[in-house]
Image: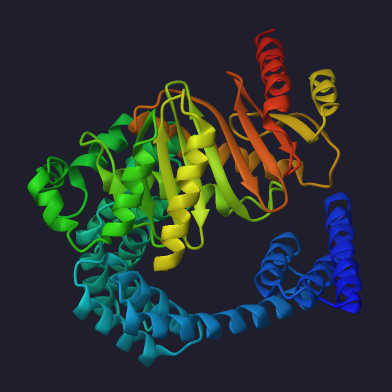
Amino acid sequence: MGLFDYIARWRTNSRIRSLESQIQQRPAPVLYLQLADAHREAGNAQKAAQVLKLGVVRFPSAPEIIRRQAEAEKSERQNEKKRLIEKIQTHPNPILYARLAELYKADGQVSETVGTCQRGIKAFPKYGGTYLVLGQIYVEKKQWQEAGGQLEKSVELDKYNYLALKLLAQVYMELQRTADAIKQLEAILYFAPGDEAILELLKKAREAAGQPAEQKAAAEALKGSTAAPRTEIHARTTVGRGGEQREAALRKTNIQRIAETAHRDKALSDGLANIRAVASVTGALLVDQYGLVVAASLSESLDEALAGALITNIYRAASGNAAKITAGQFEEGLVEGDSGNIHIVQIEEMILAIFAGPGVRMGLLEKSIRDFAGTLLQRR
Amino acid sequence: MREILAKLNKTAGVRGSMVVNRDGIVVASDLAVEADEKSIGAVASSILAALESALKRINMGKFSRFIITGSEGKVAVVETGQALLIVLLSRDVNMGMVNVEIKEAASAVAERARM
């Protein structure tokens, strides 16, 4: 590096530090724009896009930030599509198809979205995320029957998928199947009690079904009580295609579990097993951006789909609100209970959750997480 | 409450703190950064529901604390019985150093809330 380059970089870095400090003290739209420019000047387009995203959260009605963020996102999507197409050709996995389809969907490329989903489903029929994206496309086109079919398949594969259950409930409402809509919404409240959006939908569904008395239970759950036993027991026994099936699913044998997870990436499963080998760690779980479990190493007593749903629910609540509580973009979270902890780490678009006893040694755990992140990023 | 928060805020790396009830309503606050207090309270309350549900179903006992690390800073949401103590922290704060102060403040908040 020449002297001129060195000085230029030093100036840019000083400017970044100064702007970050000003934003901490007194945030303003123009500061976010300047900070994004400084990061771009420093050759860090990803960081620039991240800053614009935070700026939009902080100042949702500032037109210049909104415009610049939309431009940055579009450019990011183009690069990501190119990368995913290449990766599908060399190292295909189901998440790549779903992710690519979602990017096409974001750019309004409907036929490419549908085509990518169909290819993904053909190659990996046991992955629920692709059915979900296809269902979303049919919802946008108001093709309710087709949407319902895809979303039912997604829910069948992943019984605790928040997005699929919520969208399926909305589709059932459109199809005048209010009783079915109520079942899906109650299923969500089992792992996301107090979710205001779901409670609102449930209220509307019950009104449409002529069940005003049930609103009391919804109001109980709105208080954030995890002890809404009536709703919970009802949800536990009525989700999906019937209570018996759900209970049976919860009593899966090991053989069934192995068969269902056979398509999973062995390197990721091995990576999670390594994390679990750290003293006091009781389990580890990797969830994708659709809330679907990609890999898991958990004790048999813990239903991995339910654990995935609970983790996704925490992640959704924390990451969606991190900027509002001055933390910026969510990176990691540590939940401490009186008999154990849950570590939640975002690695690119995945969520890694580690369950540990209170005595876990953080240094060892952090090293194993770094090793796992390296494996994950290689396979991304 | 203000005195407890003011004392906590003197700790290196603490950018502000507040106490909210379990419905997210602000009881007291002392923030050194520009932030929407009501919004922070509401967010903490909504996250609490997700946390309590997860801990209960994964058999990890009662919720005691949640620490979020983000690109701009850390936020600790601490159970104090009838209320939540929320502490806004610098991203590079030494948690070992600040943990003791947070625990003391949480105990003091719990004590005050009982009075």
